[in-house]
Image 1 (cartoon, helix red, strand yellow):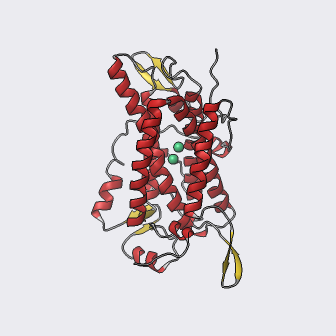
Image 2: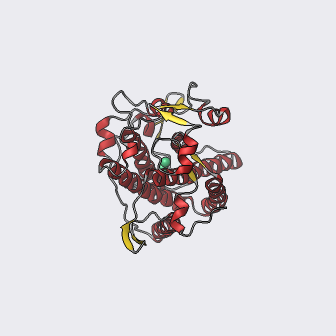
Image 3: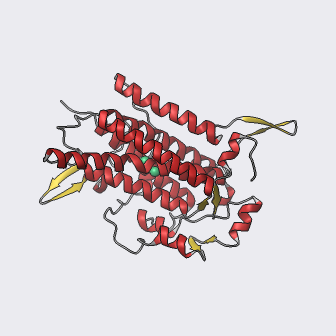
Length: 332
Ligand SMILES: [Fe+2]
Ligand SMILES: [Fe+2]
């Protein structure tokens, strides 16, 4: 078993890219078995096809809103000031987690010595996709936990939920689609799968307990987490635009991404894909900050509106038009 001498190597080892963004011997070997060509995955692995592609031809319960080019380009990083002690707890927790993740994955740019020379540590396509897959595997947890706990609470108390559940489950679905899309570009190895398993166990347990104690802090926590997600994707987009990720410069988005985001012709490259994902994260940021501003027991979800006999998600139908970084403040 090969042992990596540096913690930063952890980011390199767990995931094998499927795209041409490949430089290592092991990955080249893998590409003989699985190739990603012109936006279509050519793979002999029936099992893999089954796990990520089965629903492409089916109608989704949550059709993604159509984002315009102007909307996805207009997304910006934003930060909501921590006003209360609850906000500070949420922000502090996110910062600790971010620091830990950066430390373990070697994400933070830094200078390392190599053969007596100093070289700048940079993110490659392989490191970015590894980071995306790990982060998205974690990001899919909060919406599902919150939706599940509110669902159970609604049943337990025998009263309605004020329209929160669908928005939360839709967010979890959206995060899982991010993960499934990136899995079209890379095949996680055993160590990555183990990391995801461990992280899910810890995060699911911790977030579930925290949500039972204070759902308000949890939504604020997710709001701050999504602020970081927007920052991360913005940095990846900037790396791509600056020519630091050459293997992604001509790579097309996977077919399932084109279908899910309804990406128009001429807007189906890797950069566009990252812009779409970043826009989703910005929406999660605003939605969770907005939910964190509300009374968790009595306030209605502002992203759900009753239209006739149906509850329709305003966040879904309005796309990105309501983004402003901090979530809607509650009006008294
Ligand atoms: Fe995501
Ligand atoms: Fe997100």
